[in-house]
Length: 364
Image 1 (cartoon, rainbow, N blue to C red):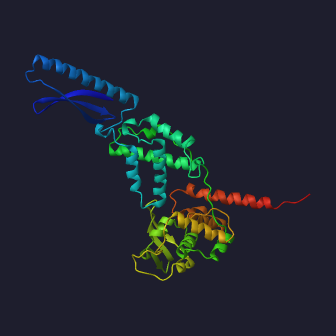
Image 2 (image 1 turned 90 degrees about the horizontal axis):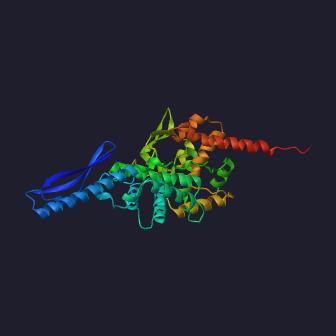
Image 3 (image 1 turned 90 degrees about the vertical axis):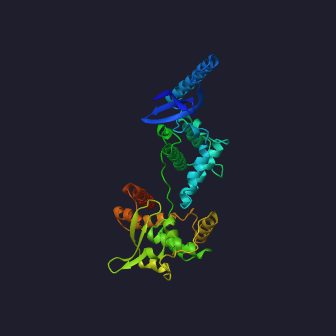
């Protein structure tokens, strides 16, 4: 890590600038300081000396900042830019993925609470990253004024670190300070789902939003995520003599290309086929109001569990394993990249087996 003071002739004057070499990368910072070196007068020589002393002081300061990890800028003109505004721009690029967008939006709100006056890039260092982690751990609250769950801390801090990593790539920082602070460990996920009896019960109840009911039940029968159901088009719903009905699509979350067999019952739920590029579930929307209507529909069936649309995917996975489908096949049906992601559902089944075993008790 080296900072050198250099000169450059500009329009008859000598301009002073700093030449940085950080982690093999070179960049410059022009100091807006000038020397008069063309037959200077006595006064100009004295002025030049003072200018050089000032430039050297700035060079020394930059060297110390780099060594202490507080100077992390490829382009010094960006030193005063607001990281929170930059984070918001990254958030807006994720608008099409509602679940991911909402998580980024939640992190932005916590950043604004953590630093009401913003966070300049020049203020970002390892200490600042640790301070935000501590804020999430000990200070941040949910809308209901509860402490954040372990998984929320894990998710939010990872979004924060992802933004720092992107800022490093975009040239705002020469140091990815997020790498120097360990993240939160992920907590054990509580994956709510419906049993077969509960699923049969909700089928018999009317939902205030019929398309929501159809989409939810379709997810229970196929394991598709809301994001993939919402964008599903008729061209992706296909049939062959060998495979029967199946869906060929690209997962919105992982971008992976998938071929998913579906049952005849799942296909029949879709109704009359429309134009190839037409959405299958026309009118399906995501909002807090729709989530409320989903919960009210489930409650009509006498189910007190907190159910979201994603619980349909959990229901599919759990029922498949309960009915004897091997975990490798379930993993492929869900489009999981790693088997360990599916093993969470296997743990649920093991717990249910244990509960069932303990239900039989003899009185001696």
